[in-house]
Length: 502
Image (cartoon, rainbow, N blue to C red; front, side, top):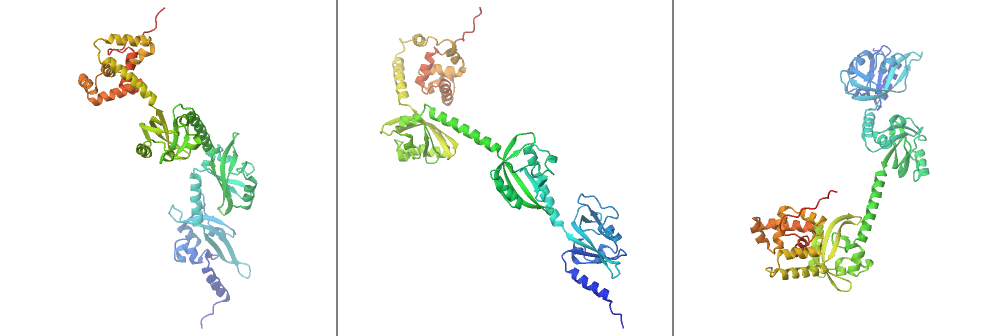
C-alpha cells in the first residue's frame, strides 16, 4: 500500500495551485539552492517554457541569465536576488534588467521582492522570489526621457510630494540661461515658474491638488537678472511611479516684438497712406471692396471717407465704363497688380476724371488686398498736347529754324543747361541711347531709326522705354523737350566742368 502524501506536501500543492494563477511571477527555491518550481508568469518573464530552462540551481540560473542594474552595470557575484535571498537577506524591491547570457540587449525589466517560508520549528524550508514585469513601464519611461530631453519646447518636471524640480530639458535651459544643476533639485520657491502668473492663486491651488493648470502668462526670473515673459501650462504625470507636474512653456517675447514691429509698420503705412498727394485707396483683392481711402482720393472723388469704406466699387458706380472696371477688377484678382491702367472715374457729383490706375497686392489684417493709386492725367495730357502742338508747328518747316536756333532757345530758357546736373544727366546716357534720342529729336519714327542705326524695331522701343525711365517723361514730345532743354544736339555730351585750381 503506497504511502499517503504528508500534510506538508499537500499544503505545498495547494500553495502552488494558488500561485500558478497569479499575474506576478513566482519562483520557489529550496534551502539547498535547487529551483523547485516557477509559475507560468515567471517563465514568461524569462522567455522559457519549463522550470528546467531556468536552471536546476541558483548557480545554473546565474550562468543562463545576465542581470544588470538600471545603469547597465552587471550585478556582481553574490548580488543576484536569488543569491541574496539564499544568504538570508530580505528585500522589498530590487529592479534589475534581465537578458539571456551573452546578449547585450535587455529583454525584460523585473521588480523583485523576497519572501521566506518557515516550517513549524521556525527553520526556513522554502525561499520565494516574487517578480513583477516592469518592462513596458520602464520602456515607456525611457521613451519619455528621450522625447522630453530632445523636445525643443521648454519644459521642467516638478515632484508633487516635495515640490522640487527633478528634470529639465535643453529647451528650458536655452530659453532661460540656467544650467541643469541650477534647476534640478531646487524647490518651486527657488525657481518659481508661476511667478507673475495672470491667475497665480488659481494655478498654485491646482498644483497643490495635482490637477491640470491651464495656459496663462507668467514671468520667469532669469539667473543673470531680468525676466522673460512666457505662457506656462501644467499637466499631471507619473514619472517612475512618482506623481509629478510637467510644466511646458512658450516664449512669447519674439511674438510680442513681432507684434510691436507690425504695429509700428502699420502706423508708418497709415501716415504715408494718409499724406500721399496721389489719390489712393486700399481694397479687397477679390471684388474690390474699399477698406480705406486717403485724403487725396476723398478730395478728388468727392465722397466722404465714411461713404467709401465698406462699399464695393459697383455700389458706388465708381467706374464710368463698367466693362473697363470689370476688366480692371479681374486683373487685380488674378494678377494682384496693374500698371497705368487708363480709366475714367466718376465722382460723387457725376463728373468724370481721366486717371491712370496702378495697383500692387499687399497683405493686411483683412486678408489679401490691393493698394490702388489713381493719377489724374487730364491736366498732364493738356500740357503734353500743347507742347506737342508747338513742336509740330516748328518741325513743319525746319529750313529756316535751324538746330542752332533750337539750341539757343533752349539755352535762353534754361541758362544752366550745359552746366552741373543738367550736363551730368546727359553724360549718364549710354552711347546707343544718345543715338536713339538724337533721331527722336529729328522727328524720325521707329522704323526709320531702326534702319538708320541697323537695329531691330523692338530694340528701338526698348531704348525709348529706357529713356522714358531715365528722364521721367512718358511721351516722345516730352522727351524732345527734355533733350532741348539740356542743349542736346545729337553729338557726345559736353564735358562736365571740373573744379578750378586757385
